[in-house]
Image 1 (cartoon, rainbow, N blue to C red):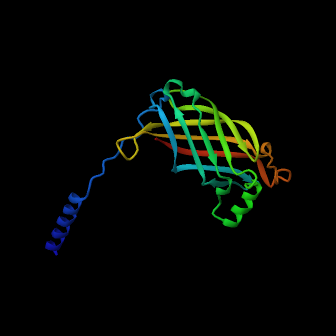
Image 2 (tube, helix red, strand yellow):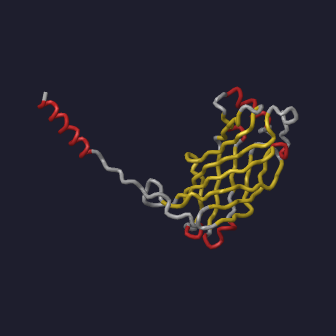
Image 3 (cartoon, rainbow, N blue to C red):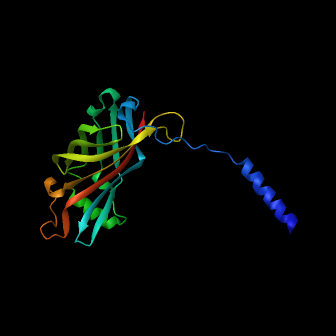
Length: 206
């Protein structure tokens, strides 16, 4: 038995020694927008999420997700406050984990008539700590309204490779769906007029 135990331990040590070592890449190196490399950045769709929360009859903050996101911007660290980012959302990409309910909610958006939800920035404020706000025009259901987002710049740095630049952002805002012509069930308080919008996104330098 002692011989078998020793042999097993030796095999584990040899296997461990032979296993490839994957070095851990650096975390974001800066949250200072003036130190981010200039260039064009595109949304990493695999690492992007947009969720919304709406009060359902007072019982819960029901959560839904949009899966169809895209976006890009051109960045100049000397004039970062003027960055013009464009984010688009496919209204048909709503995901509740219930296909029938997805179809019902999507119908309220009239996606054949209004096939895209768009946000275009008009101004950015913030500092080296990464905290700030972003203003922009939200076009939803054929209506365009100004919206202000609370945004955290989570940082810039390399991803899983030692080359290239990756940026990360977190943020939220609240809108009234009636402002965009979606007042279904508001009067009977079945669902709230206020909608919380939460996003987590990463961009890669082209």
